[in-house]
Image 1: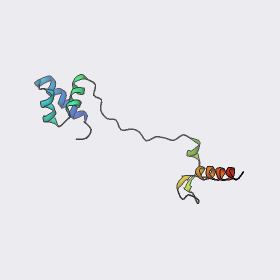
Image 2: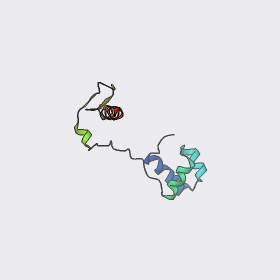
Image 3: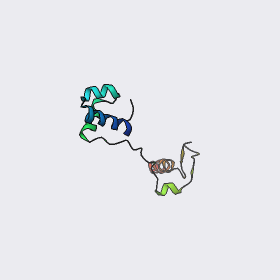
Image 4: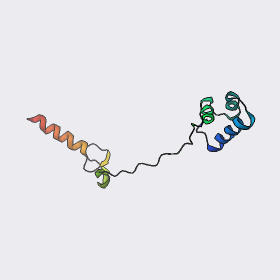
Length: 94
C-alpha cells in the first residue's frame, strides 16, 4: 500500500476510539501498517504533503540552456565542465 490518506487515518482513529480494536486488527482491516496505525494512535502521524518543485534562484538560472558542442550534454551555456577541462589541460602543459 502507498501513502495513507487523511480519510484512511480518520477511519483508523474511529476504529481506535469508538470500537476499541487493537492495532493489529485495525492494520488487517484497513491495510495500513501496524507502525503507521501506532503513529496515528499516538498522534504522531502527519499527512503526506508533496514537495513543491524547487525554484532555482541562482546565476545559472539566468544563463541560456543549450547543448554543449564539446561534451554534447544539455547545460547552462557556456559549459563550465568544458571550461574546467580546458583550463586543466592548459595547466598541465606548463
